[in-house]
Structures are given as C-alpha cells and as structure tokens.
Length: 345
Image (cartoon, rainbow, N blue to C red):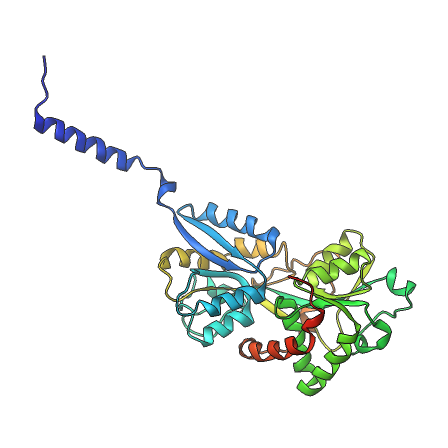
C-alpha cells in the first residue's frame, strides 16, 4: 500500500494551493473606480452597463449629485481626492479644476476623432467633452393664454411684470442649467444690465428648483406657465404629449457641455484611463445621443422629435475656462440676492 511521505504531502498541498489561485474567477480581480457625476439618474445605469461589458476587469462606483454639489465636493477634496474619474459634469467646472492643476493629463484612445471644441487644447488633453445641453424656455400653451400671459420670445421678455409668480428656473448654485443661464445673461447683457434684469426676473419667479429638469416638467404639467430648463427635457415632455412650446431666446441659448476627466493622484490610473478611453468611443457617443441632441462625435445628429431646429447655431459664444473661473464670485452674488425663493433641499 502507498504511504505518502511528509515531503510529498507538502508538495501536494502546495500544488492544490496553486491550482486554487489559478481558479480564482476573473471578477474577483476587478478594479473598482470611484466616478463622480452629475448625469441624470436614468443615464448612470446604461453607461455603467456598457462600460463594464467592454471592460470586465473594471467596476464603476458612481457618486452622483447635481452639478453644483459635485463641483463643490471636488474642490473641497482638492488636497485629498476621493474620486478617480469625473464622467458627466459641466465642462465649465472641469475647466476650473484644470486651471487649478487637479486633472491628470491623458489623451484617450481615439480623442483625435472628436470635434475640437469637445476637448481641451492641452497636449496631452486634460478633459474631453461628451455632449452639450442648452437652456430654453418651456411655455405652457394652455395655462399661458388662460392667464393672459404672452408667449415670450426673448430673455428680456421675462422681466415683464405680467409674469409675476409664473416662472420657475433652476438655482444656479445647484444646477448647471441654472448657472449657464446666469453666466450667459452676463455675457449677453453685460454685468450691470444682467443683474438689473435678474432683479426684475426675480419678482416673477415662483421658485428656484435644485434640478435643471424640474422647470420644464412643471411647465409641462401646467404647474407653472413658463419654465427655464434644459433642452432635451423640454423635447421629451412635448413628445410625451405635454402642451408646451420650446423656445430658443432670440438673444441666444446658454449652454455647457458634459465632460470626462481623470483626477490627478488617482491610485487606479490604468482603470481610470479605460474610463476615459471608453468615454470618447463611438459606442459612448451613441449612448450620449439617446439623451442629448448635440454630441462630440462628427456626423452624429441625434436630435429627437420636437427638438428646436438649428439649436447649435443659437449657442451663445462662451469661454468655458472663464465660466468656471467666475463661478464662485457669480454664485456668491446670486445667492445673496435671490436665494430666499429657493426650494427646500
């Protein structure tokens, strides 16, 4: 009868241990990346699923909030970053981080194929753009006439006292849509005139929401006659049967774009680079096009039904870097003047 020696037992145990290690499933070796985002709630699931299917060795852990909250969080964590990647935050905020040296330079694979305005001018790039969204007016075509409220055609029209308590817009300290509107008004009108306009507008505001979607939704439901909100939400509500007109103000449309960037100091650089690579892939832009009409991939025109025609030509000329740099000063002044009508958080 065979009797194993001590040496044989040791070798056998070692062989079994080695086999067990080789049998560890691939998912146990996934790298978990923390991704800060201001994407809409219905976007994060599909984006995560598509990325992880293409990169099975990386798992995304989202930290999601409004643009203002995520921007403040990244700035507060400047000396001790918690995020690995930003994927889906206003480019004006990302440009501010870039100016402060908070981003990791990296040119993602395929970055040269996207529109030049959708990437930083640095080489290597420090951020890439995904899609652009515009601020529009959503006018309820039932409630407006019922209350003898004329359909506005310009931002200046909204200062008319006839609209008292009939307008809702996003709080710019919380919402990227709100901030881009305020910043664009300053660009269009000049600073002094813009604050005078906002003083008059404030008299007509029923509430400042903490969401860029809410104003057009409220207008669509007839809760308010006019909502200053973002373009795609207005188009979606109208396509769903809401009695609203989506208006591009004749002075021009405020806008910002969503961007992707790697946070300098990430301990998961290789995995973070995979997120950045995916973010500029054709597959990713096809995903963005399901939610936004203007994307960074040439030749893609995913405008949905009821989207305002020629919206891209209505975009106000904006310096995103300056928009980010001016953010704190402008928001401090806005909050001092108007925060009393903000919705409870």
